[in-house]
Length: 410
Image 1 (cartoon, one colour):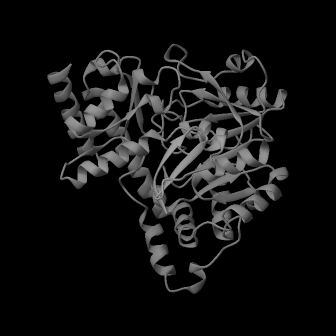
Image 2 (cartoon, rainbow, N blue to C red):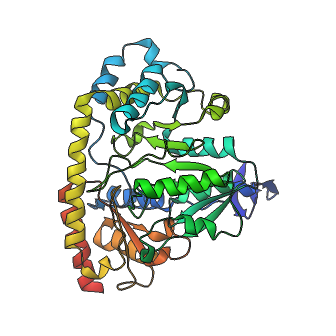
């Protein structure tokens, strides 16, 4: 039996009780960065276990929970034995049809349910896309700042992330000029609109220009549309009709307030239906049956949509509370927050390192936030991200705590 163990790069040393050392290999793919926001959640949970009352602005998780029809659908299905077994790998037919109907209702598009792939959250969708579309050593471009799981999953799949810096002076937006300036044409490109952490929303013309560049350069486009439906005074557009080979990824986590159900979906072109099916058969067999039933009700029942639209109004109020109430020193170089539910801003006026700032806000002000280092490989330690997916009362209290702490310490 091992007495204890130590880790070095790509090897794991297990010291046995008799003093012998057993060395086993770790793959290069496993040497990826943590998702820092999850570390913050863990430390926040420890403080709460000690009795602290925290304001949670670290994670993009709606505080509202699943809509009423989704919860009722689960209860109604509990006594049905079929609701506790496997489903078809690509998803139950009512859910795939409901997602297809969603594209007709929201975007005016006709989507064949056969092109809908139900996944374990959007996270597995990205990994399935990477494994289905690219070979080890291929390059996939993404924005910096951008969602850190993209680059970590790419590395774990043996792919190389090509980071494209987008900054406030450029409106935080990816443009074809950025792509033209790359030393080499990448194999793939990931875009997100609305974007995490900046909240940038690309308009139809901007999306079409990026899609055209990908078509002209034989680049597989993957569009992260997980925050669709959450925007403020701007429209969100799907890239689906603009790029014939694009993969569109979405989820029930954000707009539908169902993070813990772990249901996402992809719209894939015809050439990827079979490869995706085979990969999912081996990787997951099927998505949780009860969660699929709940997701079907969430996306199909008009009562759900009415409830969910009410959350968007709350997010807008929450954004106003933070943007209008936080110490003005934090609003320097703030990203637009046109969509999603994040406020991303420069902190160099009050702190040398946002990682340290976030740690002190957690321990001393009891406000959980996320350092920009989770999203930006170059300038992230100068930025902080706040999630305003919670209640308005929590946003008001968090603003008070942050301002009070800054007044005493900065």
